[in-house]
Length: 225
Image (cartoon, rainbow, N blue to C red):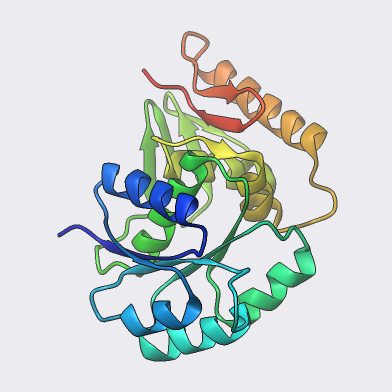
């Protein structure tokens, strides 16, 4: 059964765009244009909520509380606010993820997919496979072409993120949020160095294969065959 996503966004253009994007990717959608309307239409069929933080009237914090108390489903905040401290406060109130405007469609779809999978009742596996890479997230081991690879903490987390979203581009902001968890040390140079090291280690195992490709100005993704 297709998942239902509630979109709470007062900008009609963005609301329409999100409806089209999500429906094209197999989701059902419900639209609301204010926090009060969103709370009213939020029902047991909703699997995830996209919430614009800057809504007229009630504060985003109050809306999050009421949505969660009615039906506790994942809430992804969509906002132009870049303040890290604000993001942390929202997580404390119950928000599950945060996407900064303007966002890349692939990033939003990947984050939605991750949140829906984390709350599903499907049997989860610790094994991720892409081409001849086999990753075991339980014991933090990686093999490529049957050869064991030693990865640092951040290298492992970065490769894991890419392998969990093989059909989507992982944007830089998504990688920083997930892999470095807002650490000040995360920047473009740090990311590029880690990608280069992962590529080198994979190439040493299988020189004839390419695994990671750069999406210039946006981020990285697994190379499509």
